[in-house]
Length: 374
Image (cartoon, rainbow, N blue to C red; front, side, top):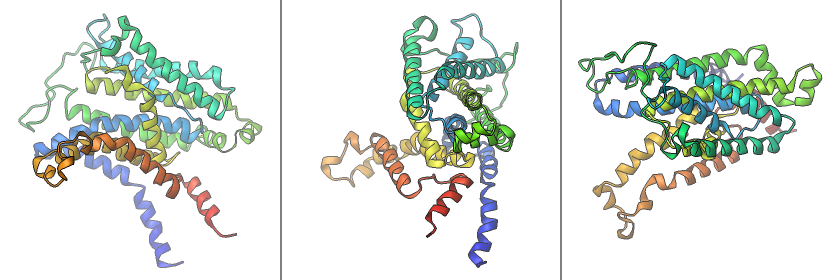
């Protein structure tokens, strides 16, 4: 065995621990005594939430092989379940544990109820049905004004942390001037979302190695062979969709609380489902680490890096370096071209890394086998 082969073995082992190293770094960032660092760190909260959403899609698509285009609808169901049970317009006003439980259960039950009738369909036909459900869900959220608030959404969403407990002063500004005073502010909610992502990641890892996880992979590889071995494809698909939709409901609950509003129903449309799908494909189908990497690259680029680059491009000193006919133009902003950049990245991925940046071990082995000369 060559020296490169000997070195590759421990390096691959160390590479598997980078999520743990990232967790430690993200937990330490709020304690850095720099307001500029805090300003950028707080923007990672939605990235953590979308990573949970992408892990949910990875359960459905990466593990089971079911192409689902309506996951953003379950994301919206979780957000609106949180809004309905938390805003002062309705008599509920439950605490955070109740909101979290109801959002997960509502999204999971609706996911099973809407998918079960279509399980006779396969491939593209099932994908079209899930896309239709996503469009219907956005239409209902926008037109049920008395319940969902229509295009305005529901706000403010300011639930208490525990039942019967008012908002305590959980942080003191003497520790850090940028720290908020309630559990919904930075860095408390930031840490809560990070820990929720870490717990989801670990639980899915345990599930991968369980009997159910292996059954999902067998179903993805060959549904006919799996059914001949005694597995029930319909039951396995419904279990995966229930889990994936439940994770989407969890992400929707956290998103609504972080934004203090459910936002416009358009935030949960088909484009959101495609963005999450791109994160999974970019990172690697069926690989949790790859899904995290894809989410941090795409969503982090969209929410964090793009505004920073736009501000830099619009500075007078930077504008002077452009030709005169480009100065002050709207299309010099990177945000105007982000969808084109996403499309170009996906095209390059399909050409050079079809299995993703961090492909699943089985997919990587199959690709290496296919590339060997006969």
